[in-house]
Length: 222
Image 1 (cartoon, rainbow, N blue to C red):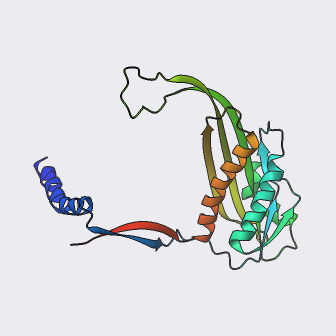
Image 2: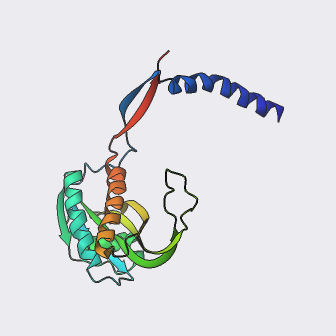
Image 3: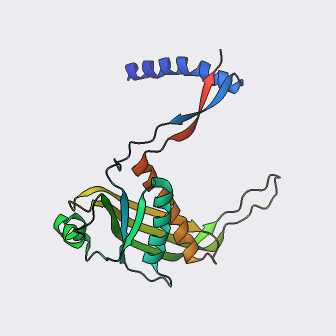
């Protein structure tokens, strides 16, 4: 315990001057580029072919798969600089994504092509929650009471697989679970769906391309 206290003491001794320098404004703010996580090697492939996704428990009034394919066919072309094709195939079940023989038999003539496939589920719920208003900047004898309000909750979950069409082997897979709550009781389901798709797209493109990120850093001036 004594040793732990000594370590904390020394850390504070070194950290405090830097904190006081920042508080006094003796620092410079820099914007630097940080390399992203290494992406996968897409150079051997000229084309990405999107299949229909295996959609589970679809209760929406629009076509989840159709909107998904249209959205990602555009985004992949813009961000990965590959030829984009759409194949009219629905995976029979979730086990097929690891079945190399299945994919080889379906697309025996495709060369230098990655199959973009997977499964997808999307759900919405209506929930009631206590909403606390922000406190007034002026003190008042009456504090606002939290109100019971209706909220719309949306969640998307999908597994994405990139499969080498020539070998049938999966070279990339990732699971996404994204959730979002809206206070607007009239929030449209389709808007929320695209809102969540954008979150998935940003994470997926980052994983595939390893794009650089811009971050802020502070240089303390002595």
